[in-house]
Length: 289
Image (cartoon, rainbow, N blue to C red):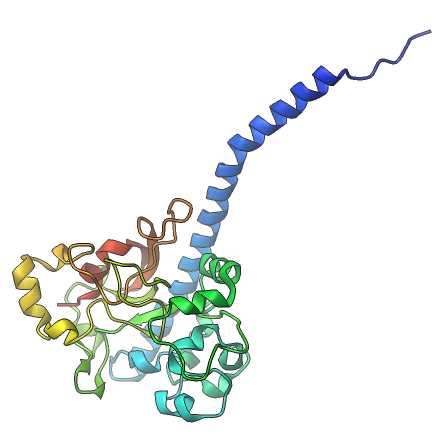
């Protein structure tokens, strides 16, 4: 008669050790695969923005939408309307103005976004959810009425503020109003993952509205951006930490854990193609002249 023999303790420990080693090898690879899949979804979302821009421009004399009204009807309507926490700089995480559920707030351009798979990058949504409402503390401007009550991150794609009409306040003016005015459409982005954090030496603000200002007009008495470009020799030389920017493209794609500077953010360019852009190259890809 055969005697059934179980595993010894040493054998079990060896098996467990082998499994642990395999997991240690596989987990980074699985994490990279997940991030690559999320980045692909993000680029598909932005591809939809590019298609929306093409259709909008065709119907509006080749014009870019107003960056202040990329998503919403007008700033003033949602500044004053009695919607909890709807203040302009925290709309991205306020479920009460989520356009998926509240199309009544949609701007003229937002109505073209049916081709966009979503308004938010899945990588950013994971980050925002893991940070919770504390992420809103990174925003440069705080509301006067406390925290957002209905915290529900739903958008993080913002428009290059240099592309659009002269608008709103005299000092806040778009540089180019029409798509055909962009001389190098393959190297100027129109919508992007925006960096959500203030980062000392890199950017002054986090995600706060629907427009991405690489360098804000009249910031630190530097009203003439062309003079600043001349000082640096090229727009591509204007990059942090040598020159702190106002807003930046996100750095959470392809970055090491916890490092939101060395990675990249996805963008869609004026010519319609999508791709990643390094955070430090934000100004070079944003300035359209």
